[in-house]
Image (spheres, rainbow over the protein chains, first blue to last red):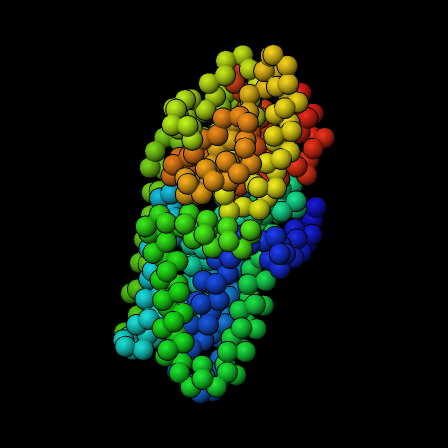
Length: 233
Length: 173
């Protein structure tokens, strides 16, 4: 399997009906980019699609992919250490996601938060958010990912497996980006949403806060069991 | 005032610091292929407590499953068949163990009960055993030989590797 193959498998896994597991992060990623878009508070918000959706989504991708890949390399000490401490790391990730949700919820009330929307800062915040999402995500193991994890689990092929996992995760992120851009594009054209950007932004902030609460309280397993379990049948 | 300088750099530093602190907070000795399986205590759904690898002189197959995972549920019939194959006579050749992770205990117990799993089933409260075994996604199957050495870890639906499963299990004997 080559890097491009892994990327393609990751992208196609995002759209696979078997991939209910992706719903651990998809609604929350969509809430993040949609919320960012509506922080513009402008009726002509579609003008900022690139800066408010594509920039954070593309910055999110490397942060997500690096941590995703490191979590797979069970053949290396760093991978084993990360998984061993995943409970603590999920809590930290939950705290960071809470800050991201507050940045959406409070952006209309505290203009000072506007600095978070500067392109470089927004890219950095989104990069770290990608890492946080990778920590709280437990992927479904598709046949392609099974091969990659098999490689990543053996010390002699761990680096190669980790590299493939990185590209696989980038493929997932492309799926997230395409879906996010499409959703924002559609929502911006729905009259009632476009007329109430603050309400849309707050709703998105609350959705993101829900993910934070799940991870801070250790109740993510209930979300998986009831929501994903219900969809998986 | 340059808010970027005053806020974003400390946020990144704190995040990375916490990440590194979390990684090295304990003396890590998790599972490695070719090394002895790490000791861990498991509570079975029956309420009994036992060591995960408490099968001296016997090969062992351990599957980590989640109640919500389609691949986990899809692989259960195959695992049951494999168990029957290695335990049809009076002698048990390979010990099987199923461990529920990333699920509420009752939900996992419901799945195990529905499928009438014929071998011991335990629940990993807080995913502590999964962490030691380096497992972050279900389903994952661990193959341990008669000396207690981890020979192989397979990630994914073991049903898709039927022939390999029997080959790998035979190598443990």
